[in-house]
Length: 357
Image 1 (cartoon, helix red, strand yellow):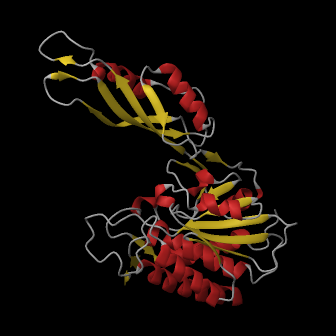
Image 2 (tube, helix red, strand yellow; image 1 turned 30 degrees about the horizontal axis):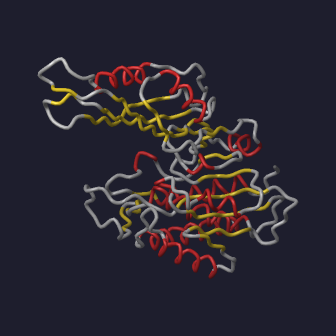
Image 3 (tube, one colour; image 1 turned 90 degrees about the vertical axis):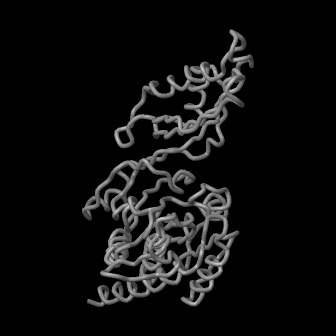
């Protein structure tokens, strides 16, 4: 009963904290005020908060470098509200067991649930170290978020990344690579048989992107997926275009590095191909990992996620697991169920309390 009472009290405090977070605008790269608030909030709980840029983290008391370390991480930035909101996105509102507000589902509920699980777990003797990190710029895959924090932390052996997964385990996640492609031709007058049309050259490569299949497929993530999402050419109707640009969204699986995929593409197309970045890699954690095995024993399902998170920047085993539903993210009238926060805290604690790794 004592543990149940504590988690119920923690749930109420977590919900109150989330309400305060919703009321503070925290768009990507503009998280300063919320980071200030969280830093102060954590210190009022008797913990030492460390800060870099708009990232906040804290370590379990008595941190022992000889022990393994688990990172609990979620992000404090949000996208900007879409036009369809019917209520103030920065005014937390509770109706029929739902807490409405921008960032409530993605990923404020994960932030507060992981934080209060951290508070609970660090009040007990554990065989491992815990670090909680509330980080910035996740929604834009920025360089001043988790990537910079990891460089400041001691060795991490495992991470739980809080994102709305219905508290199921995403043990694998597709990576992302955005390609800028350019086909070149020769300009000419459209009324005569002049020039070399860059659009026609580009269309051959566009067709290749639409049909090509990489050989290695993942059991969890399926094949590498390539989608042409933007195309632009021409200056006016009567000029044969000498340049056509298009953009390709590439979702990688764990069977390839982004660099390997880029090399394969460049061998097969005639256009010039440049990757904006190859740093957002696909990730996969073995089902035999002790944390994953314990989660499955607790009834959690495992799956591969098609969407990107800060997992992509973690060079150690991790899972994506948090309260809420990914389908609610970035939508008008975003909400989290209060019961989802309560369940999340209890599941995180059940998963990690007295865990042997």
